[in-house]
Length: 573
Image (cartoon, rainbow, N blue to C red):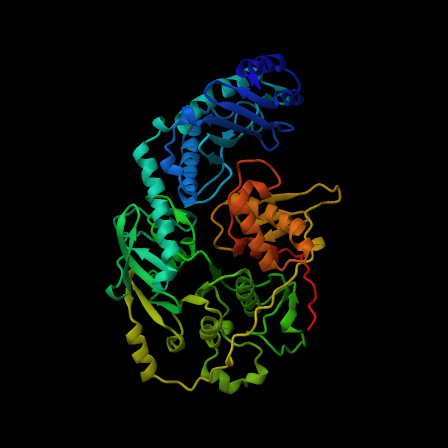
């Protein structure tokens, strides 16, 4: 290993040289208080920045083992230090120092969720940060002295501020870790209480804007107050008893007038599959981890999905037991989204009437009388929602403002009134009895089988003609995968861009390592989760880098299902 003075001499020597001279500084350097790893060098100042790591021995960092004694605590601590590192960059780094990305020091983007990321690693031996550095240049001429300032002044200051325990607000570190541990505890105990979700007393559900995940901060914000009939308590390891509204397994309707908080509650539940930082307002809004948002998605690609539980006897003659299309309608896309989520293992569906296909949700008695069932290919959700729970144990939380017919199938009905929930289950049942209709159930006696699919690995190819693998996140809404762009805009449970980067790599990993062995999609996702659990996220990624975050299996599957080159094996009947 070289010393920091070796690095200084190298930078002085290449000062004023062509940009490729930076290749000579790749390596490891002992800075005394930390080790600097320069893992990759960018090709020019306009390319993706260079990958760098700093490792601090625990004899220097001195993070108490109590803060990372289990996996949940470790992820929480790594999340806190990542945020502290980003703050330290904002304080210590000068920033722009020449052309392109010159002078940039950055760590992974993050939001309000606490995720397993590759940006930070904490163990009993060391603390290691992975980040990016834009090596400075004017045009393509090395600015060696500017690089010296970055490596010898800015980065050491950032390391001291973020990676040394005594330099952090230790009480805030502890609260961060304890909050995440308690949230995880509640999530792991939902099933024992017969629940699929929990919203704590005093939670702040509204966000500051439609494009921000930060909590709304105004005097008019209504803190969450659960109805007494649905109030439950969890005795958490760190914060003691936490009370709030428990949403039972089964079928739950969220009703109420417009702008009274129905969709706000559903959105909070959708994000509740992840832990959130203290102060987010939703840190104790907890949802079972296998919850998936379902919506219509006109125009999406579908490959060999058995949508026959919902759609049969198409006039075109297409086989809905193995349905494929390049341009799905609202109803067929919503049917496919449900079946694909079930194939991936979902146990809770989150549905908003506003983003659903009307003809997929309900067919009332008047329409039944006018259009005979044999002339209507669609079996609406209302006739399958009870069978989903009865046959498959899959619960549904449904925002519904337009059809009281769903009162007949609901186990729980929650009315949002000026952002305050009321349990109106008994009232809804009385209304359903009072206003009986003649609508005929059309769903049969069983939901139907969920048929596993076998993706063909050759159809999952991120290579271009040059054989170069191209996998890039295009924001939160798109993933470039070779020549294809996968549309992710309707996947509402992707929390941050680093998850999109990981999704691309993990799809490729599945193609190379699981689908080649004829695994079904469900089997492949199971094995992937097992490997990540045993070896960590880094073990299944293409590159060593700090800008990745762990996605859920449901978003991995959903992205693969939207890859328009995907082909699945034709199954024998």
